[in-house]
Length: 209
Image (cartoon, rainbow, N blue to C red; front, side):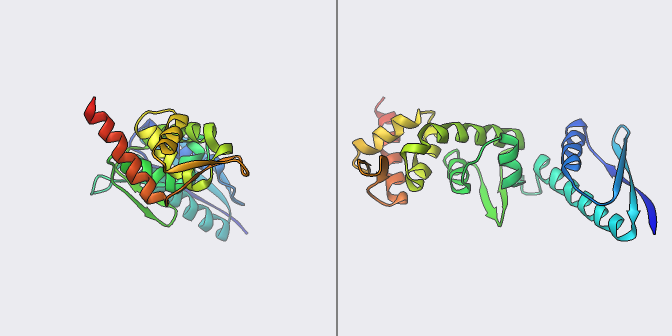
């Protein structure tokens, strides 16, 4: 037996409305949904079986909570993003480890809770940052191992250096080497040690200038 229910979603501004509508359009539900927008609210007409409607309402509320969490800071001033949302919006693919290390290098607060990134960096800036990480990664992806990428890419973006230059610096410092048999650069030391020594060298150079 088919039924109908109307729910109202309140939004603060056009940005929230636009983000919510984008997410809603991606939703695949057995229920039929019709949205009527007003100034600060969206009336959502849901039609289907009672179970379909219940599932649709749950997913709609879930989407709205996710949109609000990424657009508005919580009581600690932090934003909550899913990694998938960030990568999709930035149209790239970057490891979570690279994103977290870069945020740390920029002095941002960052925590990882399952697939949720909690950070002090606002949504649009986070998207732009991940886009830059994707570009840096694409320049060296074929000639590096995963471990060395997790050092080179964050440093490249944080210090505004071409990734190739960061690679050269690692080799110069004896922290990485070119493996002829693999056609790739590899770290000589572990990732944490290499990053620590590279950062000391880079900040030391800056002090001398």
